[in-house]
Structure formats: structure tokens, C-alpha cells
Image (cartoon, rainbow, N blue to C red; front, side, top):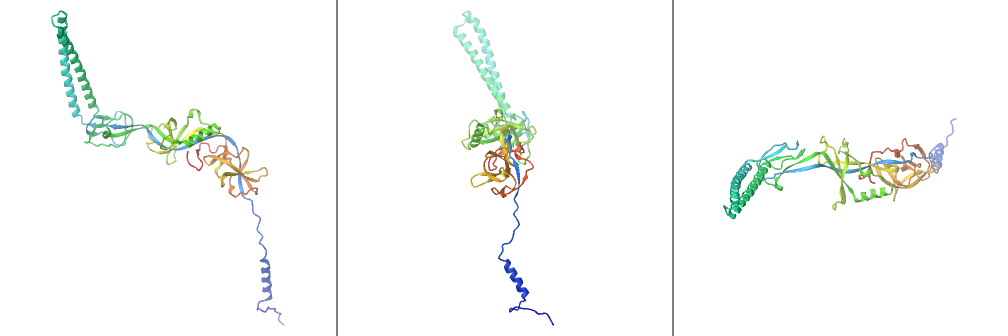
Length: 401
């Protein structure tokens, strides 16, 4: 006798129908999810201390002395005696003009001088003979006056002739054109055989002194007023007599080995740009810096007393202000509005909103909710303990000042 099998009217086994019913019964219930873990964040304690400040500027180098080499007399250019682009010495001959016309003019002037000197000698001898005769009334008073006047006239002619000789000697010396200083030479604007004249058309080349080198940058009116207000409020201290130390950073990020100092502040703002010029000077004995380079100038020597620095990643930006997450006495996060100042390296100066000793969220701040639970991990180092010393200060938004 075989076992009894039950089946439904639809041809499905009863066991299959029971399984489907169990599944349908479970569809109406919500799935059970595991408990959500609190976000892991790092926390640091805010400290306040005197912090060195470095101001960064976009700057351009300039020769401390640049001289245009021009022709001082008219004539033909005979030779160029230097290699374009080389460093030349003071007194080194750069160009030679044709000397022959000037030598001839000098000879003519010297001949005129000799003639006038001869006439003067005759006039002096005549006067010497007439004077004793006039004392004896052997000649008339008019003869004495004529002799005196002729001697003076010939003496004046000698002086004029001597002046002409000196002029021609100078003109002859001007045919040899030398560098007045040690510096880097430019290309020759006139070539051999050119006729040159004094003035704008007589520009031959230029020589730029390389040591020392100037570094020029500008301060806007807004920056000047901002620094003045911060100094008045005690938030910023400049070095005595504004004796900043200036470092230069080249385009590839290398730091120029020699430091400089400020040596000029423009007395007024530029009407075109609304900025005033600041100039630093530094030694450049090896000629590493060339005129016209764009560099970064770092002005060091200022400080912010009792300053609070926090990492930039700890500061979030809301719809109307910046804020940080501060842990209250119960260890719960609270949103705190802060007033941010300049950047200093990877940190941000906080002007208002935080006090020394408070704990703030650094990493993971974007996942924090007000009063929510946190998995707190202390930061390995506090950013406000001077980690940014020597880093350049930047304005909000990362723009160099």
C-alpha cells in the first residue's frame, strides 16, 4: 500500500502552498537594521600663543642701477668691443667711434690756441715797452690805453682758444664709449658702420648692475588699512621701525640663499593701481637673480600676540558665516560661529569665537550633527602650537597678500 499524497486543485503540492504562505506573511514586516555607529572624529585643544607671521607678496626683481649707454658726439660707429650679454667691468670699452674727424678738429683748435698765445705774447711785450714811456710822458695816454686793451683782448682770446681745445679733447674722448659700472650688458642696438648722434637715436645698449638686486612689490590701500586696524587693536605687531627680513622664493620653489631688508617705501599711492611701492634690497654676488624675474617675497618679522590657530579643515563654511564644532562639557558637539583671519600655512587664524582650552573637531567635522554621539580620537598634535611658524600668511580665500 503506497503513501497518501495530498494535492490542491491547482496541481501544487500542499507543502509548496504552505511555504508561499510563510513568505507572504513575512513581507509585511520592516527589515531589522544594525545600530548606526557614531562618526569617528579627531579632536584638538585650542591654545593661544604669540605666533610669528610671514607676509607673502608677488614681486619682481629690478637692477639696483641700470645705465643706458648713449653716444655723446655724432659720428660713425667703428667697432663693438664687447660680447652681448656678458658681464662687463667698470671702465671697459664697449664701442669705438671713428676718431679721425675729432683728432683733426683737435689739431685745428690747438693751432688756433698757438696763434692766440703768440698774439698775447706780442701784446704783453708792447705793453711792457709803453708803460715806462708813458710814465715819462714820452707817449700819449691813448697809446698806453691801446696797449693795455690789446693785451687784455689777446689774453681773452687765449682763454677762448683753450676752451675750444678742451672741448675738442672731450669730443675725442667721447669716441671711446666705456661702461660706467660693473654689470650685465644688453644687446647692441647699433652695429658697426652706423651713424649715431646724441639723444634718443644715440642709444647703443644698456648695462644693469646685478649686485645688489632690488625686489619690488606693492601694498593695496585695503591691506594697509587692515594692517593699521589690526595693529591698533593689538592683534598684530610689526618689528621695530618696520625692519622686516625679506626672503625671495624663485619660480621653481627654491629659496634664494641671501636675505634682504626693506630700503624704500613710496610716499604716495599710484593713481593707476591704487597701491604703493615697497622695495627690498639683497645681495646678489653670484648673479643668480636677473632683472625682471617674477618671484615671491616673504616679509618676516611680524607676530600676532595670543593668537589662535586651527587647521583649515576644522573650519566649515555655512550660508552666512564660518563655524567649527566645539565639544561642550558633556562631550557633545555644538556649532560655533567664528570670525576667521589670515591663513598661515595649513592653518587659519581665528579672530573671534574661540577661547584657549576649548576642544574642537578637526577631522570628520563634515559628518558631525548637533548633539550627536561621537567616537572621539585625540589629534596627534595641536596645530595651534606653532606648527605654522615661518609659513606665509595669506588673505581669506588663499590669495597672497
